Amino acid sequence: MYSIDSSLLIFVTIELSPYFKITGMGDLIRSILSELSKLGFKIIVIAPLFDSQYSGIRFKEPITIRRVFQGQLRTQEVRVGEDEKGIHYYFLPGDSLWDYIKQGGVGSRTETSGRSWLDFCHSVLMLIDGLKEREFDNVEKVIAHIFHWQSAPLLALLNRVQWRPKAQLVLTVDVLEEQGRFSSQVLDTHEIFHSLRPSCEGEFNFLLSGLNSADIVHTVSPSYAREIQVRPNGGGLEKVFRELYDQGRLVGILNGIDNDLVDWRCIPVLRDNGLCITPTQSGVFEHKRRAKEIFQATACLPLDPSAFLISMGHRFCDQKNFGLIERAMDGLMQLNRRPQIYLRAWPEPGNDDPDIDLWKKLVALSKRYRYNLAFLSPYDRDLSLADEGIFIDRFLYYAASDLFLMPSVWEPCGLCQLEGMRFGAVPLASAVGGLPDTVKPVTEHKDGWGFLLKDPTDAADFVKRVATAMDIWFNNYQLWQEIVSRAMNFDSSISKTVDMYLAKLYFPDKPSKEIMR
Image (tube, rainbow, N blue to C red):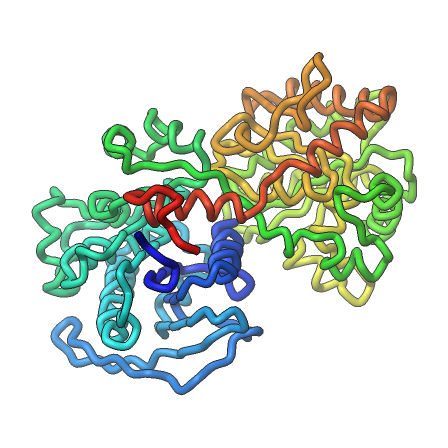
C-alpha cells in the first residue's frame, strides 16, 4: 500500500504557466501541480531558468552542483524556491536553453541544440542525485514525470540509477512534429550517453529514447492515444506506439482544467464589470449579453447584442488552421445574417516567414469586412494599443462569444475548447485527437453541445456548420440555451484528470483503494 506521505513526485518540464508557456502543456502542468499539492503530495519541479518574474515563488539560497561535462569541471548555480502550496522549484540556468525555448522550441535540429538538451538532461540527473539523500528519506516510491522530447533522454539515464527499483518513470507525449532527431554523434556530448548508441543507427531520436525507457507513456486524450498508432499521426513511430499500447504502457487520459482558474468570479476583466456567475446560476445569458457589448466596444466591432459572435484565438501555425478561416471568409460573409468574427493570433510572423502571406490575407479581409471581422495579435498589436483599451483578455471573448472555433488539423487534446465551453462559447471543432472526446456534436435528437468538422480542410462544410449554429441561435433560442448549458456543465475538472493519473500513471500496480490519501 502506498501513501501520499511516502511518495515523491518529480516533474521535469521546459514550460510552466504562468512563468513561460509554449503550448497548452504549460497550462496543464500548472493545473496538475495545483491539484496534486491539494492532495498533499511532496512535489519537486525542475525546469530551465526562465526569463520571468516568478510571482508567487519565494526564493531561498541557491545551491551549487558540480559535474564533469565534455571533459571540463562545471559549476552550476541552481535557483531554489517554494510556492505557497509547498511545491519546491529548481531552475537550471543556461543561456542556450532559454534562447531556444523562447523562440517556441521549434525547428532547431542543429547538433548544438541537441548537445544543449543533453547537457540539460545530465544537469537534471546530477541535481536529483544531489537531492537524493535529503529528499528521498522515508520515500517508498519516486515518480519521475517527464514532459517534452527535449527531456526524454533523462529517462534513459534514470533507468540506471541505484534507486530505480522504487521509481515509476512516466513520459507525456504531446506534439510529435518535433522529436529531437539528431546525428548519433550528438551522443559524444558526454560518455554517459554512449550506452545509448547501440539503440540507434546513425540517428539518435530523443523522444524514442524516452519511449523505450519509460514505464508508462501518457498522451493527453484517449482518442489521441489511438490516433498515433496509425500513419501518419505517429510521426514515424506508429509501430512503437502500437507495441506500447498492446503492452498496456500507452495510456490516454483526457486533459482537465483547474476550476479555480476558469471561474468567472476570478477573472479580473469579468469581475470588474460585474460579470460574476457560475454555470449553475441563473442569468447566464444576460451576463453573456453584457459581456458581448463590452467586448464589441473593446474590439471596435459595431455594438449589436443581436449579432452572432464567433471567436478564435490560437498560436499562428499550420496546426491551428487559420488558412481554413481565410478560405471560408467570403462564404461566411454571404450568409443571410453576417456574423461578427474576432480572430486572435500570435506571434505575428516576420517578412521571411512562410506564413506571412496568410497573415496579410487575414489583415486584408479584416479591412474589407471591417464591420464584421476584427483580427488582432495580442502580443504585437493589443499591447501597443493598451492605452486605448485594445488589450483583449481571452476570457472576455470566451464570455462574449456564441461560437468558439477550434478547426485544428491535429490536436492531442486541446484546452481552449474546454475553457470556451466553461464560459458558454459553443465549440466548433475538428474531429481530430481529443476534440471528439470533449465535444459531443448536436444532433437531430437535440442532444450534444457542439459541432464537429470531419474534414478540417473543407471550407464549404465549415460554412455550412456555422450556418447551422446560427440558424439555431436565431430561430430556436431555447434549444441554443440548452446547448450552452450542456457545454458549460461538461465536467472537465482537473481533479478527474489527476484521479486518472494516480490510478493509471503513478500507481498502476495498486488498486485505487490501496492509494492512501
